[in-house]
Amino acid sequence: MQRSRWPISAIESPPVEDGQAILVRFNRLMRDLENGATTRNCFRPWEVELLLDIQECDLGPANRRRVLQRYRRAFERRIEKGSSQLLKLSEYLAQSRTRSTRAA
Image 1 (spheres, helix red, strand yellow):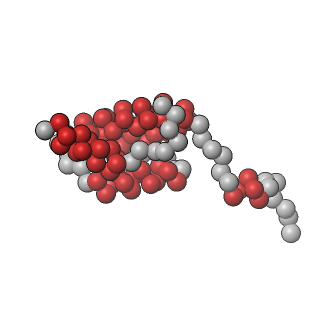
Image 2 (cartoon, one colour):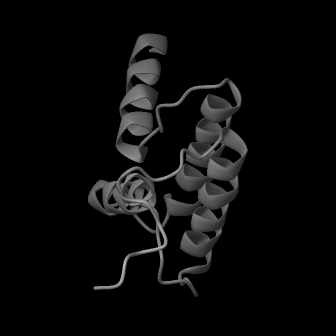
Image 3 (cartoon, helix red, strand yellow):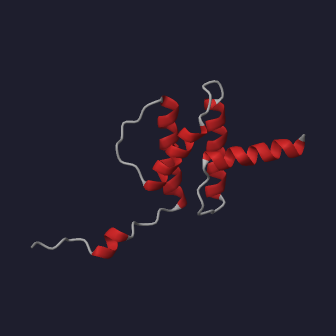
């Protein structure tokens, strides 16, 4: 039996991405969504989670681009502030609704 070159611990615990790496991957993901297609077939688990969340939000075609642009800016601000918690679109939309009802 041939032994793997990689220790088990390296396989079990993926490397932690820093904020800048997350932003690069997130922006690439958002560009793919805006273009309507992606050329890659490998995604991080958090990217899949965000994609599923975006799909569940079922944005209408009229608002989709504008909402995704605002979401992108809010996501970027959160990461730049040093948060390790990723912002889902559903959370962003809930926060936006709360703010708009408070202002009304």
